[in-house]
Image 1 (cartoon, rainbow, N blue to C red):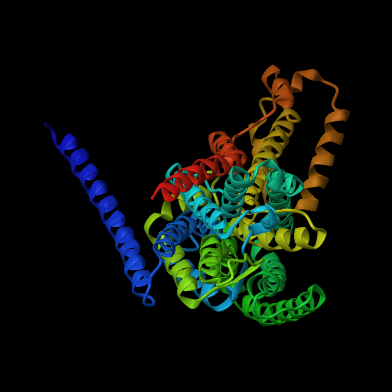
Image 2 (image 1 turned 45 degrees about the vertical axis):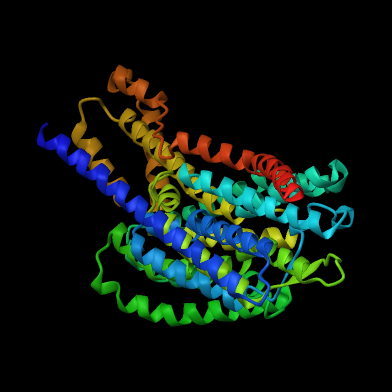
Length: 527
C-alpha cells in the first residue's frame, strides 16, 4: 500500500469521525428536548414529547438548508469565511426567532386546508405530526444532495398531504395550491431579473469606467444607501412585523430616512480613501464587503423571525390542542417561550452542523461570485420580496435568492459573449498583417469608458466601409466576424438539480405526510 492510498484511507476515516461527531451533537440536542419536555409539569404528554422531538428535528433541517440563502452569496464572494457566516447567521437567526418570532401562530399554515373539515382534535394532532415529520424528512434529503429548497413549501405540501389523507380532496384549497405552484416561476424569475439589473448598473457606472475608483466614490454610497433603504423597509415589514405593526408607507418612509443617512455618512468616507486604493476591480469589490456582512446578519434575523414558524408552528398548534379543555380547534395558537427556544436553538444548531453543504452550493457551485455580484443578489432578494408582497404575488425567499445567483451568472455569460463578438469585429476591420494596429486599438479600447467605446466602434465601422480592398481581410478573420462566442459561467447541472428539487418539494412532502398520517393513525389507534 503506497503513501497516497494511506492518505485516502486517513481522509475517509477523518470524514467519518466528523460525521459521527455531528450526529452525536444532534442526538444530544434531541435527547435534551425529550428530557426537558418530559420534566415540564406533573403529567407530561407522550404526544407532546414526540411532537417536540419532531419540531426540533424540523428546526435543525431548516437551519441546514434554508439559511444558506442568507449567507451563501457572502461566503461565495469571500466577504465572509464559512466560520464567520455560521457564527453571524446562528446568532441572528436565534435572535430573530426569540425577539421577533411573535407570540401566536396560525394553526394551519397558509390556509392550505379547511380546519372546519377536520373531524376532531385527535385527527388534527395526527395531521400536524405527520406534516412536521414529512417536511423535515424532505428537507433532510434535499440538504444531503445540496439542493436549496423552500422550507415553507415543504411544510405547506406536508400539511396538504396529511389533510387530504384525513379529510379527502375537498379539504384542500386548490386555488392556494395553484398560487404556490406559480411561485416556482415567479420567485426565481423576479430575483434573477432584479439581480442582473443591479449588476449591469454597477458595471455601467463603475467597472466599465476608465477611472473605476472615482466612479465608485460617486456610486457606492448611493448603492449602499439603497440597500439600507430596502433592508430597513424589509426588516420592518417582514422581520419586526409580529412585534411592531407598521403600514407600507411608514416603513418605506423610515427606510428612506435611514438610507439617506447612510449615504450621507459614506460619501465623504469613501471620497477620502480614493488616493489610498488602486484603480482595480478588486479595490471596487472591497467597498462592498462590509455591506454584505450587514446584509447576511439582517437577512438571518428576518429569516429567523419568519421561518421559525415552519418548525414550531405545528408544534405550537399541537400544544394548543392538547391544552384545550373543551376539545375545540383554534385558528391561532399561542407560542410558549420554551417552544420558541426549541426552534431558535434548532435552526442555529442545524446551520452549524449541516449548513456548509448547501451554503457552498448557493455560494460557489452555481456560478463564481465576487462582492459586487453577492451585493446585487442580497439587494435583489429584499426588493423582490417587498415588491411581490405589495402586488400580492406568491414568492419564496429561497427561490428568489437562488434565482438571483442564476441571474448574475447568465448576465455574465451574455456580457462575455458580447465582448468576444466585439473583439472579433475589431480584428476583422484591420488588415490581417497589421497586428500592431490591432494591439494599439485594443489598448485604447480597453481603457475607454462606455460611451467612448461606442464612438471608437462606430469610427472603426466607418473606416472599414470606406476601404473596399477585400485583401485586407483574411478568411479566418471574416469567419471570426460571424463567430458566436459562448462561455458557460452557470453550471447547467445545478440548474437541473435545483429546479427538479423545487418542482417535487410540494408533491413529495404531501405524499410523505399522507403515508405518515396513516402510519401514525394506525399505530396510535391500535395502541
